[in-house]
Length: 577
Image (tube, rainbow, N blue to C red):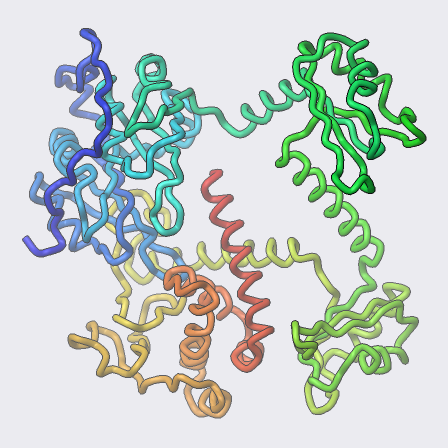
């Protein structure tokens, strides 16, 4: 076996053993092999894979267990990069079960894989049945240690510790058991136990709507009251007397400023909700020492922050709606155009309410701005007459300004449409019906990834130009079969426009993409996978716009940020589904 094969399994983390009851043994849930067992699915989900792992590497590993009928590494439809998980199909249930026992959490290219039965029914995955939430985990506890701890209670369908982008544990995770009964027993036994010196919290996993409903119920039964806008000289006893008449006080805290200039505030925690509610109803907006005080339910820092965010978002939307259809976005402005010049350019077309050129921290123009007209008719006239007009030698791009979320939504929709189109093109090129894509069958590897190169979102077909940065000599082996090698792309973009003019039309985006990718990679903190996705998204723009991005770092940064946000929204929606 090659060096891609899994190494010896890592040692268990130092967790204190869970007391094992007489009726609970590892694998106690296993049933006798029956006709029904033989007909169970034989597809395994293999997750937490390095992005360099291919079907061939996985075949070499899993074929040692038994006959493998197919393997599919799931890849991004735009960039064709691995998404970090795969499906492996065995011919028998016994082989698949043995693969889980022998290979789960084994190292593949230095990273622990995670194997479980493939469950394609979303209603089962989202039901929450047998799902347990664990928090306050020591950072040294990994997936295998968590799995070994909870496997004592019965069959674990999946087990995962949540990590950040660097792979560092965030201190919480999930264990999915076969039944609710097993989950309940695990919760009862492990909750409050010490694991690596820390008491862990274990409970039934609740969906976000459930958690929000519970939080809302707790807020409705509040006992803690917040008092603000108190004078700096307020006496504690005076305040106590005011609130104690509503009921028994559990705790009382008065915070006064040291300079005797700023306002004081207080927190009063009653023993019951009715007392707190009465205090709020009767004392809010009353005067104390000539000041109208605020009395209300005490809020957490998260609630206050969220409330302020909603308030400012509403103000922003109200302002945007006020100028809906009258606010124009203008880009490709010459560096010499300032606010006054921009207003002068558009003033012949109507009544201008505002004109602003966006600048960087040094006050230099970022090449775009906004002009707001008095009426939608004036704005439409400006678009018709000014879009494409030369100003200081540069053609203006003029359109209606859109809210950021709308632009991101449009980009997300376009991204989804492009994904579906690419999947159909892949299916057509490989002779596979499109309805078979993504169903766990053998996925045709109809593309090649060039080491050091950037793979752009072209459909498979004729040989494509893939250029390793630094030139073809950077390949440590012969170029992949079917891949044509083009000349190296210069690391600078000064002559990019002239270069693009001289090459065939079907290679222009490839060349521009090679020039943009290093800049996008730097902006995305050298995250090669994310930079590749964003590059692919931006390449849907026309070549003229792409060339402007290559020359204007500020404009490129803005577009990358929007594409990044749109892609994150896409991933979030995919996870919810």
